[in-house]
Image (cartoon, rainbow, N blue to C red):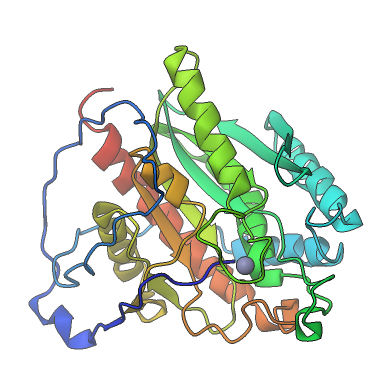
Length: 350
Ligand SMILES: [Zn+2]
């Protein structure tokens, strides 16, 4: 996955909450069309939010078996083994893509695969997307990456081991598959797109300024821009990225490239659902699939449990170190975020 960028670590103390929650009314942003990407992809790092300055949100609970449903998907996925196309396609990569499509179709969604070959790397990747229609045609995208870190063929033998990426790769896929039927039952103000991105992981073992990583998100954003220019695509008003959201000892850091307003919505949702201890005890940036979206002006937030995660890119990133309870927490928080995102980004011009 990704090396945290400049080491800005902010310990946020619980004492910050003394002032209580402040009701804020914010107008819907008037969003410009998707911009041209910046030449050098260096996202802006923001300050941590003021944890006393939050929105009052009504908690929305995920179905009681949401975490168990997501764990069942994660079990199926990890049984496929490694799931990447680095060096060559693994059997698990193909099996997982079929599984994702089958599950989405079983939920009643129309699935679209986008397969391409990167000319420089000569590797084939596949993104998968499905759309849950809402009142508004513009979209909120919920995204994950489905590839796992390649842990074979490295010169350094310590980097060659069996890796199933239960949390790093598996958890985002499992979460999106579990939330699909929930969203189909929901009255969606925004159209919601479920997006499974390939090639997030760096081909080099160490993060190489994203030059050999984020293949799927770069591809997706480029296609989105091209389609918008041709008048063939509705706009994306916000991205919520889920990456490593199932560790038993879950802690979602405050990711500092993420759009401030979306971080505020995320943390306010954690407070509303009673999960404050699992969120934002630490703040640090992380390069991830949200960066190409931010580069073209799309507001984005990354729910990531990277900072101090002892299982990251280790053989111990297994089902045993993940839990249904953690996925349930993230389910509550994301479902609580959605109405706030709809109000913030779709409020005035529908
Ligand atoms: Zn990773």
